Each structure stands twice: as C-alpha cells, then as structure tokens.
Length: 358
Image (cartoon, rainbow, N blue to C red; front, side):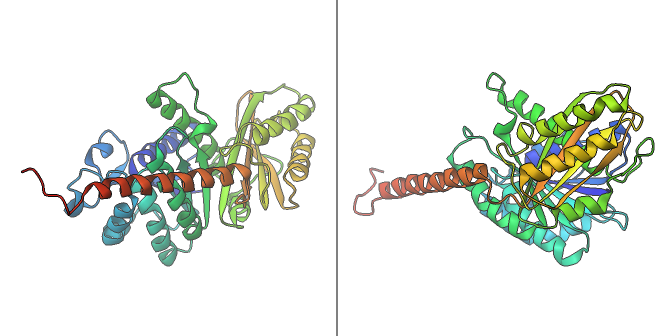
C-alpha cells in the first residue's frame, strides 16, 4: 500500500518521519513521500523529510500556541502553498494519503481537518487521518482541542485512525522518553499496515493487498490498530496456536485505543516467514476476531517477510461507539467547560467601573 504522509504540527512531523524510517529500515518501499508542515520554525529543524513553514504572516514562525482555531485559519489561508508542496509527494502510484497530527496542540488539530477536506476535493485516493489523543495529564486545553478536532477530523477524512497516548505510556518514564517510545510503537504498526501488497520477501498463501486495507477502512468515522508479536517455531504446524494467541493479544491488549473490541469491519494481517506461517492458524485467528468483534466483515491474510517471529496487526474500523472514546469525549467536554470558566474569571477581573492605578 503506497502511502503519502503529511505530518502536521510537532507530533505529526516526528511520527511521519518515524514511520518513513521504519519503512526504509524494513525495505518495504511503502512510504512514497513525506511532507512535514508546521507554524513553528523550530519544530521543523532536525527533521530528515521535506518541510514547509506556514502562517509566517500571522505568527512569524513562532507557532500558534495551542490555538487550534488559529491553526485552522492558517491552513485555510495557506492551503494553496501546501497543495503545491505535495506535488511529487502524492503521485499516481499513491494508494492513500495519511495526515498525521497530534490532536491536542494547535497546528495539527486545527490544520488536519481543513487539509483533509481540501485533499478530498482534489484527489481520488482515500484521505486518512492518523490522530494522537492526549493523555489525561496533558492539560485541559489539550483535552478540549482534541475533542473539537476529533469530531471534525473524523467527519472530513475518509477514516481517522486513532492512537491514545495513555495506551502505551509508562508511569516511570519522562515525557520525552515516553513520546519517543510511543512514536516507535505507532511506526511499527503502521509500517506493517502500509507494507500490505508491497515488495515483501517470499510468496504467501493469501497476501493482503492495499484494496483490502482500504475496504476495511471504508465504513469511515474512526479506527484503531492493534499489534502483538511472538517467536515462531520452524514447523508451521506448531504455529497454529502461536498465531491465534498473538491475534488475541493484539486485539485485547495491543490496541491503539485500549478496551476497543467492537467495530463495523476488521482486518487481521499475519506477518512472518512463509515457511513458518500456518494457513489454519490464520483462519482460526480471523474467525476468533470475527466472534470477538461482533462483525461479519473480517478480512484476513498474510504478509510474507523473513524472520523467526510472527506479528499480527488488527485493524478495527467503525469504532465510534467505543466506551474508551466515549469516556474521552466526556473528559474533553468537562475540560472545555473548565477552560471557559477560567476565561470568564479572567474577563471578570477587567472591571470597567474601576480605574487603573497608573
């Protein structure tokens, strides 16, 4: 699946670069091009991808300060420049365009939905979002921003793949170390997903291609990605249980949005050495996912790669009813009210009936 990546904001740029690096290291050739777009000049430095600074007439390269409405306005004003920058990034070979953004900040959460709307107007390829939900401790403004962006992004993109920062963050890690680890986990999942149908090693029995990924995401709204891996035995017959148990872990404990096991469509992608993969195991895993998710639309197949481990990627789309997402939206609503109350308190201090001392 040839993917063009657009990283929006600080988190979006770093994650898009991490996915590209993972693709290069694996040699899949699935990521066709990457463009990182930001309103803050410093956030673009150090990135080894094509970059573009927008909003210079509004914020002079200093960023939007977590103001996602300003981020949306800047993308609206500068969309022509961004579209020109995507020439050569989005090509005739591109199967899908993925807009990567942290939903809690200003640039990514504001610009993502605007750019998705514009790209859908121009391109026939599906336009997906990869949105990062902030953790509980990242502040009320970030929760509010993410709640606003989540609803709008899911409406404007063909599908919005979600990652919750709290899903993989370790309590004893620093923020910087935690985000680096999260970016690596995101890159690993998306790298396998984009590799479907690309230049992989060996010949599989039922290879998943780009069309099956696209059809799985067709229900729209939101999606989550699960992952788990295990050592494989040399004999494929011994890997029947390995594949099924790894698929269970991918869905039950490895999802990018935890506690999300229901959806409208699913895809089970089993990656491993063709000489070690068991067709029986792949089919059992698919049937188990079908039973557990409550959907009859479960696609499954293999991704032939060399190695002594088996990895399982599960895509679950149409997850708007996820209890975890509903809990997040309630938190975002409460955060929005708290931000408004704080604004009201500050405004109340500006009393026109009193004169300033100076």
